[in-house]
Amino acid sequence: MVDKKRSMSRLLITCLTLFVFTACQTTAMNKETVSTYAFRLKPGEDLKEGIEKQARANNIHAGWIATCAGSLTDYMLRFANMPEGSSGNGHFEIVSLAGTVSINGSHLHLSISDSTGKTLGGHLMQGCKIYTTAEIVIQATDKYEFTREKDGSTPWEELQVKEKKK
Image 1: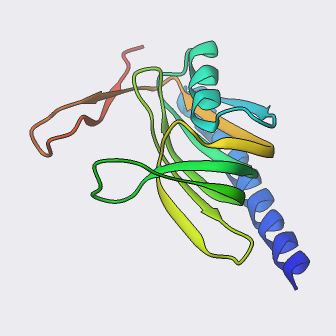
Image 2: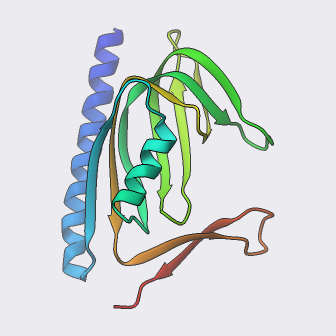
């Protein structure tokens, strides 16, 4: 049953990824370039640091996580409305990774599950160490610039989306 669920999950991820790739091809007609960056993090690497490294290496100003599959031995997540992160170790499947990616500041949420299926989720922080792999696809557009600034709506630096002039 577990193998069947994993197969279904992988099939769903593959279908969603193909949908995103197809959708991106149509945006090219609107003179927007969408770039795709696929990479793998290896055992012991830090998930957040690896994503930030890719953002810097590819000069990503307005990106998002298209998909991620992998596993962790250690996690560090900041749960909703908590001032500090919470950590744990063991073996965890990456169930979901979502968010915006930019050299100007990223905002990423991670969901993981343990061997019993218990799932945790929160803000991704440094300290999430790869167990076997993290297979990540980031997509980015040249149409926008993402920044993080205080705008008065909350006490935090929030996403600001600016359209680039061509």
